[in-house]
Each structure stands twice: as C-alpha cells, then as structure tokens.
Amino acid sequence: MARATYKTRLETLIANSAISQRDRTFAQSLLSNYERKGRLSAGRAKWVATLEDRYSPENIAAAIQKNSSMLDRLNTLHARTEPTSYANGYTESLINQVKADRRLSERQMEILRKIEAEHDDGAMAERVKWVEGYKNDPTLRNDAIVVAHYYKTTGYFGSTADAILNSDTFIPTYSQYNKMVKNKYAQKVLAAHNDKPKYEQGQLVTFRSSAGAAERRCGDGYLKPTVPMMVIAADAAPVTSAARGAKKYKLLPIGKAETLIVEERYIMKARKLGSAKK
Image 1 (cartoon, rainbow, N blue to C red):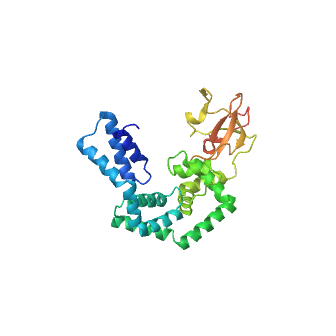
Image 2: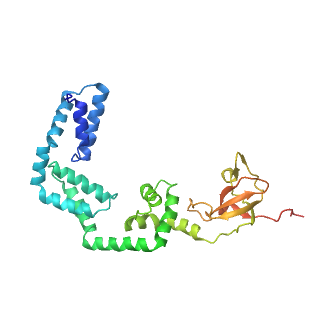
Image 3: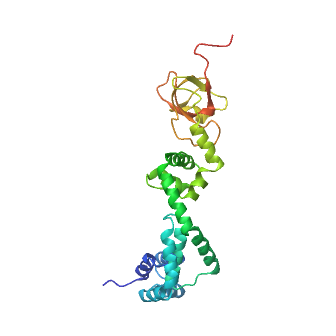
C-alpha cells in the first residue's frame, strides 16, 4: 500500500462530499502550497490533521445523529429548491456545515427562514402552476429564447440564457423569467423582434448616414455608403440590441456575390437605379 502523503491526504479531503466549501477552498490552498514548496509548515500540517479529524467518518456520523432534526429540516428544504438556484446551493452548504457539527450563525438562520418562506406549500403550488403555464404557452418560451440571444451578447443572465438556448427541457423559475424577460431592455428587444419588417424581400435599400464601417463591412472590404442592396430576408438573425430599429436583414449588394447582415436602423429605401438629382 502506497504511503499517504500530504498530497494524497489533501486530495482525499477535497473529494469528501461532506466538506464545506470554505474548508475545501482552504484544503486546496494547502495543497497548492505543498505542491509549490514540496512540504508544509508545522502550522499548515496541523491544519491537515484538524480537517481530517473534522471530516472523519466517525465525527460526521456523530454530527448527523446529534443534528438530525436540523438536517431533516435542511434536506426537506433542499429537495424543494431549483437545482441551479441560489437557494439550492445555499442549503447544500448549510447541510455540509451541520454535518461537520458547525453551528449556524444568526445571519444564516435568518436567510434559512427566508428561503423556507419562499418554498412553503403555497409557493410550491405557484411554481407548479408556472411550470405548466410555461409548458403550455409557446409564447413564453419563444420570448425567452429571443431575449436569451440578446443577453448572450451582454454578459448578463449568462447561465440562464445558456440553459434556455441549449436545453429544450429547461424551465426558468418565475423569478428568473420576470427578471430576464420583463425588464425594459428585454421589452425593447421583443418589440424589435415582433415589429413588422419595414423593408420587404426584393426591395432595394441603401445605407443611412449613421451606418459606420462595421455595418458596411462585406467580405474583405467595405461597401460605399451609397451602394444599393437587395433585401434577401428580414429577421435574418437574432436581435442583439435594445435600440429602436434592431431588426436584422440579410442584404445582397448589387454587383456583389456576398451577403451581409445589417440592422434596420442603418438602412433606408434606395432611389431607383439610374435616378439622380437634376
């Protein structure tokens, strides 16, 4: 049997499912220190032994028996939380803390009572009602998808947006949905998405003076501001701006073989080919 080193002992601690996040982070820092220096100071070595004792099978079993009432309370609440929610992660950390026989602070108890109120029988019934509504009303999911595309470009609501776009079975909580879809920026995005296209397929358009180089980029070069372009399709890409006129069009410049995507606010109806001021 291989001799246990501080490296293997710390790795065992880090892998222990009962260890708190704080103690796991501390153990990881001890491991990093050991791997960097090849040894631990007497003080750090003492902490390895302290953590091993704290999370030994015997002490965990004793703590579970001693704190069975609180653990039942926490486990019941944890089962009611959404898997990726703050409440889920918070209650899991409390469970690990109690298993390590560490007392919950008054602040932790205050937050616990708040989470319990948010997950009582009435709240759970409302959640079931919301889930059924989301499943049966395609408008809710469609709006969530439109807004998720927008937020993928902003950095906000990142994990929720990813889940909406990448999983057909993911259902955001009522709170997540309202925060992401009902705010003023999201509503502007939805308005742009739902607006009737100002320009129809086959119509000729050209750039407005507000169109910059980024909008006029086509292939390896830049189009002249006055070049006429044919509308190939409206709603050609997801709306990624909360500005008015953010609907996107696929355009084919006259005389070119490559198309480009431009927002509605940067184009206008073109004069007929061959027309000019007299």
